[in-house]
Image 1 (cartoon, rainbow, N blue to C red):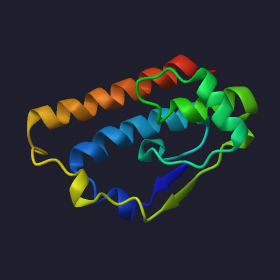
Image 2 (image 1 turned 180 degrees about the vertical axis):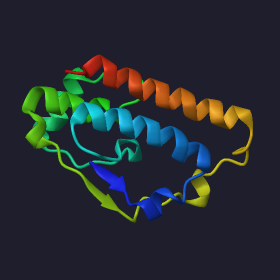
Image 3 (image 1 turned 90 degrees about the vertical axis):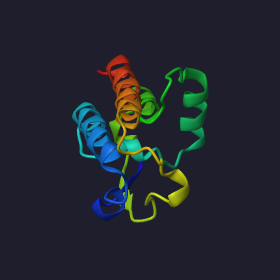
Length: 122
């Protein structure tokens, strides 16, 4: 998994930081080490891609994919690195960041990811 450094994470709106921090914490508890799964970036082996193609069903796959791999191939096949290259760019930003709807959307995304964690928990 490719996560964000604290500096890169700080470039995101507060609504993203708050909700993604919760999701990352829930995932980290399940996987057994701290990581930034909500960055949504990863490198995959051919075996991992084949497993994911066969088993992926979640609405949001941030946490689902690494848990599919862990459940089938073992925890030792999962690694993480944090980079500065995942900063939020202007094109990704919402003009409605401080509106309730923006927060609700981020909470909903967090909920979907956490549902996938619960569904694949061991």
